[in-house]
Amino acid sequence: MAARLLYTLAIHALLPWAALHLLWRARRQPEYLRHWGERFGSFRLRPPGPLIWIHAVSVGETRAAQPLIAALKARYPDHRILLTHMTPTGRATSKSLFGGEVTRVYLPYDTPWAMRRFLRHFRPAIGLVMETELWPNLIAACRAQGVPLLLVNARLSAKSARRYARFPRLTRAALRGLAAVAAIGADDASRLRALGAHDVAVFGNMKFDIEPPAAQLELGQTFRARIGMRPVFLCASTREGEETLILDAWNAKLGAGEAAPAPLLVIVPRHPQRFAEVAQLVEARGLKLQRRSDGAPVAADTQVWLGDSMGELFAYYAASDVSCVGGSLLDYGSQNLIEPCAVGVPVLIGPSTFNFAEAARDALAAGAARQFGDAVALVSEALALLADAPRRAVMAEAGRAFAAQHRGATARTLALMKRFTAAAR
Image (cartoon, rainbow, N blue to C red):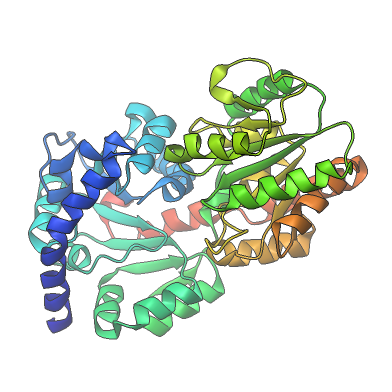
């Protein structure tokens, strides 16, 4: 209790900074100025009927929730899905994926009074927190108001575990307040237990249950028609600093005459506020750039196609021959490497994979992915694969088999829910 009191005092002290942070972020993303009241526990509307609440902090968690939301809607048609986020990009992804089929709001900052207002306003039958979001006051408020709260698709890297271990009493109390934990892998489960979690089971990763949408695959064919017959190397969900490494390696290799005909480099930055920045990086190197947003066919002399759109990642994968998963070249822990495997695209990753440690390990063992220590080696392999159709086909088939083999986490999560609330039966 004393640890949570100190935490609560710190949260209150940081509220002015949080408001300034929203204003600062709004310089590049005006969406941060919208729905301010929700961040402090003020909500206008409550949908009628019973609610099942899912918290998905940002884009990755929102996309991971796709199969769960589809399964909940099918099994509990009388329940409304409440989806909470912390970022505008997560909220925009929710709108793109689900439209009006869910109710979406921001989860308030973790003060006791805001969390009580949130729970009293929406009165969810059960709460499911995606991946690893531990909010001590939220967890305490759920216990006080009798709302079972499950941590699902839970992952915890060694780095994150060390950070939580700095506050052992606060972390243990928060984890003990959860009704149950459904971990992605054995390593995640072990770290969560060591920090104090109870009732922990290994369910696998829901991201394996995401089926590539037919509309996205069709859009991928449209993209491919715009590109033509050129080999395509996709760098997807790239993070700050990675585009520079990729572009420099790409320039060096192609300048040495290692690939003909000239392949097309497609870059899709992870965050939309960086589209203009990445375009400047391309142009600064004298490379001819086109943007997806112009809707035009990709010219034969275009060297880089910038994927400046949201919610179309599966389409970019479907239009590519070889892919690199961003967030892995620098120490970001990697973005989702399961999606390209499911589409049947060979996957290349850098050294940093702590967010997808088990999936990366299994994909490498299955022959669906290859890992490299730097951008130069990764780009060299990409060019070699673009020139080797039989080897690409072997990796593509291995990726599809790998993705299919690991499905089932969503069904196990639904079964877990039945233990905790009659509303989910």
